Length: 164
Image (tube, rainbow, N blue to C red; front, side, top):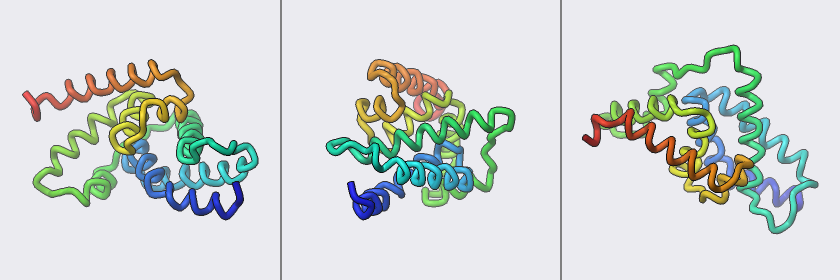
């Protein structure tokens, strides 16, 4: 892959990658942008390791996922919390009548374990296949299915009032 091709592919994936990271960081735009930039830089530096025939998007998300996990490890002693203003930014595009529902959904997703949250966000928000998520997270397909199942169950329990 040439550097020009990398630039074009990265531009095509940038919006979805930032959206995924923004949700992963519970609306913290600065942290999401930092990790997105780190992932894009690492991908660019590792361009020589990219194998032709590999899905660029999956490869890039795998690098971003590893950067995300590294960031979580570094920040293990600090509390990552969702600021009300940040939540409002994330939800600003949504209908105000439904904003409370979405805010509850956002908080329920925030309550998932990191691996469950990642699988749920990639599957439902980024429309990734189970196989792609498996590659991105470096886990077995069965593990992704379990993470999604547990994540859905947790969300179902947290959001019972909306679907009795």
